Length: 161
Image 1 (cartoon, rainbow, N blue to C red):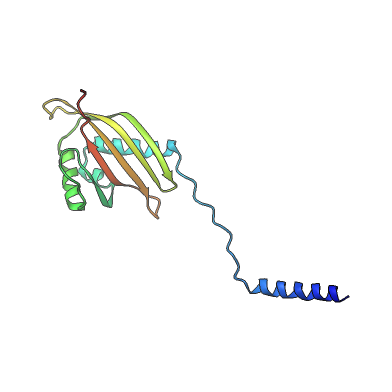
Image 2 (cartoon, helix red, strand yellow; image 1 turned 90 degrees about the vertical axis):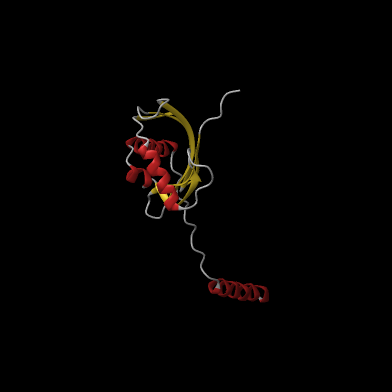
């Protein structure tokens, strides 16, 4: 009988102690990553916007804090006003067509993906008439669900040996 009374007393103390513990909130499931197909649609829209040669639309692709390397400007650009000036110069090139030749998308998490690609731009205003460039863009989704390019690296492909 003493053993039963002791077990009951211990059970009451254990129950009382557990009632004093803060409740643990159930884990919130992580947001599902963007699919490669949906990321590809965003990249296609970006390429279409680049091809529009509309400076305002092009600049609207980039996050307010964008950093990057522009195709025609040496050095890292970390200032948004300078970035916008570079995009104005890009739009002024008046490419007639920008074509995506190759792209690889890497989904990093629910709010981030990277797209790397090779592009051809043709223009009646460019003496060589065709420019090939390669870009890697990191996209990030903000709290409102808008996808921004937060960093960009564009360059001419190296010459074959």
